[in-house]
Image 1 (spheres, helix red, strand yellow):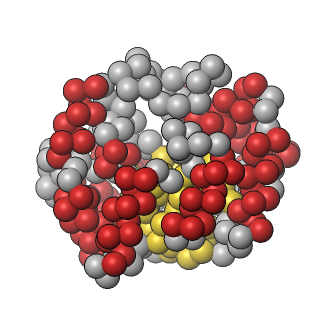
Image 2 (cartoon, rainbow, N blue to C red):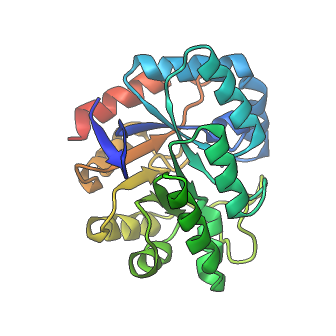
Length: 262
């Protein structure tokens, strides 16, 4: 497993995603409930320790109380994954989430993609600057996530971020509501994936590529092959898993990544 840097933080280029731990399937409310029921604390920790054994050294996870509690228990039991935090609009505004990330042991933090979509669309970007400044004051690399190219076109001109987290798809509009809505109709358009893939090579910061599997809609072979063509040497992927479907899912994904991504 190769490593690269998010700002000053050296982590594996394959990062474990955590949406399934909190029931964010992006496949409907029944699937959300399946994930919540399956992912007990014990099972989450099994995945975390299993990721370590596969050479993964970082996890992207929200600054919510559930995730932070599980991570603390995992670290207390000897876990070593680096927490790359994501702000969580359900917890509070960006600055509150930044403080949660700092106090909870995160080593990097980025502003939630839905929040960034919303702030850029509505012209409320002062919140972005305050969040990035606060992260830098605490010595953490600061990132920006987003689901559409407008976020990163804006960031290249106006933000002092250390890295970006670029979604391959823009499933739901966030102009009116930055939060994910369970059960909302989600669209995974090839045009969105192509637009993001065309933008990434011109970006000045390292990129975490996410939703490369279109929340389980794309076949893994095709998804990782597409990402491999877009990724630059200092870029990353973020992938979550649901072992109830396949206990070997994470191992298979890591093997694909190691074979295809150079």
